[in-house]
Image (cartoon, rainbow, N blue to C red):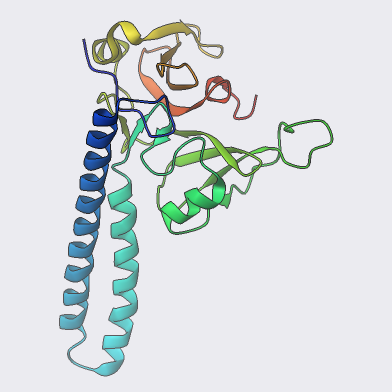
Length: 234
């Protein structure tokens, strides 16, 4: 049976030793991402300098292009993030919008076609809506007011901690998740399934949707009940 994916700090309490090991693993992963980004940035700057050696004007133009390359490298580094009960490694469901934007290094943009769909409470101005970030292309963040409630993607660059990718088969998911997997029929597909793995305290869940062909079409993680909604906010 595959081990359960690591649970972020705000998920159920864990023994101190487990929390320390998880903390060290995350620090190591963050350090690796930073080193990769710095190496890519250094290479980009070096290439730009070589191309611009003929004139100062050309140097300025290439320097601007180098900045764009660095941004692309950062986006590429983040695209390898893994999805678990609480969404992505950074940011996570349950985080305040301000903290998530600090982690990403840029604001989460309200989607152009997005509109409030479900007020938090009668008379409340805050509502459920979706945002996105250029730092994590292909990822949607659902928010209730200023709180992230779920994170989802249909982009093949992302996978779960158990190694489930977009387009994987139902059999592959069952092999990866074992008896922890809860299966139910999909509302919009005759043969599709809603595949769910709950966190130990059942406050969070990883949800995977399949189509009629039995292939994964959506991955998302977040708090209940929001993570189970099929239509964004309902």
